[in-house]
Length: 417
Image (cartoon, rainbow, N blue to C red; front, side):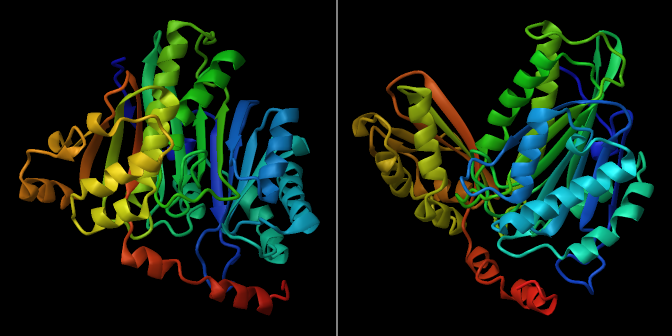
């Protein structure tokens, strides 16, 4: 579906009647002045939809936000970085509720109109004395140009903020969709380890909205992987406040398909940005599986190859080692026939019929030496396919993730452990 989109400024606050703000609380380090507590707020009631981690160990804010979304539409999202508030027991849930309560009190909302998200180190209590001190200025400073501050406040090991917004015409009305995301490590489909917030001023029916969000997440954030880990705090929350004033978009209509396409376009931009900013990664790889007997098999193969440490290491070493690719295909659990498998790099045959392909190795090596390339695996058994965006595994990634001891030292100073 071709649909012209205009990229606009403003990120999460680009749609009408959405406000944002962020403050510094020193959550991870009281001597640092980086933004680490933020708020997104709609001036009018919203439709809301959230999708969360499939990890059975869920952070307190995830459990609270799931409960709130089941009970009531959300109008505000409060988020902290630097501490995941995960594996923190009853006190962690109490702290998440305190964050929601502070926002509801300052904005005159019901408690269950507030979602709470956290990201950072797992297992440490939040320094609530510093967090609570930030709420008055956080609420008072809400503004229509606060999107970039929100995007900056949610990042952890990211090297930069990730935000994107578009506008497009729908039956003569200009619709806006904006969003921001964080994620650089512990990224894997179902759901990817990340936070993402999307807002739109489209007037959309609940049926169309619900299906559009689910399908867009499945085709974007559930199609990325950096290191194969799924965390405790993954959250995608989408708000639609209808402020554009368009005729309500009905489920199953042409307008609903246009809306979903636009929503997926924004999510896809943010999903790719997460992979490109993976912790110390050097390669962005589009991995396509074709010719599978079923969509389940296609997904199994894609995930096995994309998450193989051997495959990812070869990408980092500029090595077009199709043997590592086919071995991952073999243990994926999918139905395969070795003699039917073809593997190509940017369309150049590396493996044909399960054997060495005709392409000169230097040609393949030149392809894999580039920062972005595509690997296509054709199983030759059917019509099902699946696509994932993946990254390499570098020595620097290992070094970066060797220790979080400094955070525990600060928590001990704060009397939290």
